[in-house]
Amino acid sequence: MSVEIYWHIAIFSSGFLGVFVLLNLLGMDIDSIDMDFLGDHFSFSSILAFTCVGSWTGFLAYNMTSMSDLKVFISSIFMGFAALVGSIFLLKRLKGWEEKGNIDINNAIGKIGKVYLGIPANVA
Image (cartoon, rainbow, N blue to C red):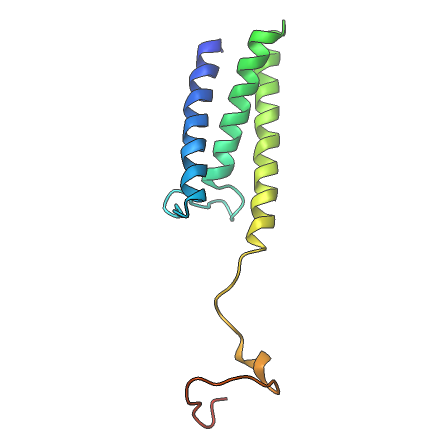
């Protein structure tokens, strides 16, 4: 694999990752792009992390070391896979912090609260 391929993949994936992060920071949730598949483990974000880290690793290893092409390729795949696993782990942890909008009415039994709307009898 030549250094130009690593370079093109790194620039494309870094630019796309930058736009993706910027849009998320601005509050534009991109659910249509962040499609989870294969049992909610892989997402667009994790694959983007794989390509970004793996291609930059390959580019830098190719230019800064005297490793063979095979070793550069293996190291880029390994680092990309590490980024993929790390992003999956972090995204799962962040999804655990999400706030759910639904409330279980059974948790309100016996509690004191303020009622803004009328409650019909025999709700159970």
